[in-house]
Length: 98
Image (cartoon, rainbow, N blue to C red; front, side, top):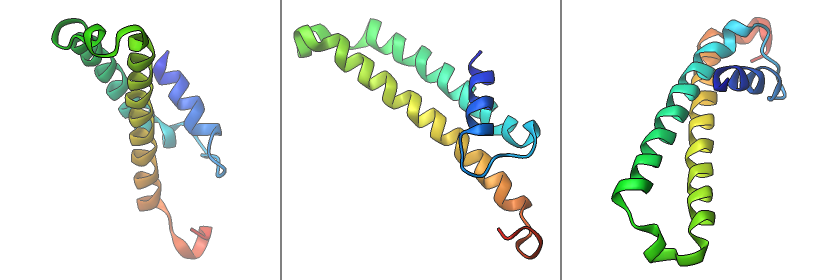
């Protein structure tokens, strides 16, 4: 489901739409793997290693949510960077105006 969501986001999200789904697939795969891995590792970290209740008290859930959103956004941006770098290597300046 994450892969499909990232494909939709990278296909229709930017101002310059990708022409095919093959253009956004590498970035969507990268973002999906990073997002899944980061979410899993973050859940392990919050459950077993750190004691957030003692540090933040009643706002612990807000802090955890904001940290998870931060890591999710990083994964999304890194997937977009993968697509941008691949597109940059494919672009011919004289014919497409890149």
